[in-house]
Length: 315
Image (cartoon, rainbow, N blue to C red; front, side, top):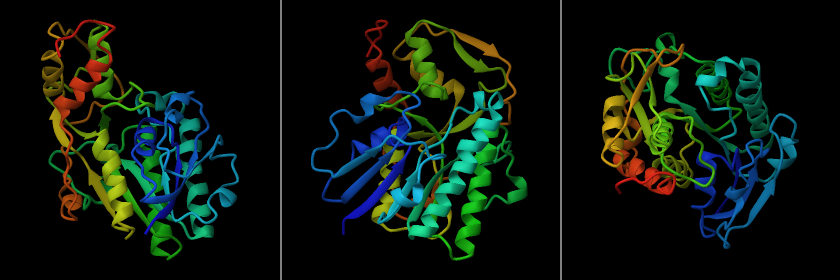
């Protein structure tokens, strides 16, 4: 059965990869909303010709979402300010887009009986001493940035709507994204390191983080898991961690050094990402039958290859 889906933030890092992976046989209509604040026009280039796309240059805070969500089966709400490090400097804006914007999306989904797929973040776990899963109690969730806080607040509002039978939804806590897309940015750890290393710059590593583990998610896995939940029609109101692998910063750097031998590290202090090492379990989503396919080293190799003309690298 084909579905009509709507994607907010459709031209971003994940969104651009998603829209280019769609087929008309699976989705009868794909509505895209993006305010183009980052001018990622190229995300719209050469879209699959067999898909019935509709693009709206709109901001979710100003748009008439009730009108846009009419006759939509599933909403994938990717629109967000995702740079955790800079979210300290723009707390009001992050709260408006990530939280108030999500409240508008929830309301429009309720009014139009749309199912909601909400990508959250593993950053909501904050400081943890051992591997964590979705059973982590609310009291033990320790988000350490305005970005993570707004995602957790949004989760709670979605769960509240589900409990009150106003909404069918699923929440995916995504690891830090690595991999390339037409709309990619370079503020997340792995991609940022690839960019810095390719330019011959020192890698900016938090002074406490070299031997600490972090959860990472390949972009292909991010896209495939979104489609998996839609195709399986899993909107049971639950939370699922989505993590390709848990790796230390040292392991990430070692992968980069295979292709760029001279990699320098600049240790810096910051008020974010100074938490203890933590690992996130994806066993729950795997129990549904989803199989992760991305590989961190392959993702790094691909990204460095795309940047290869800037600085010679051994690929």
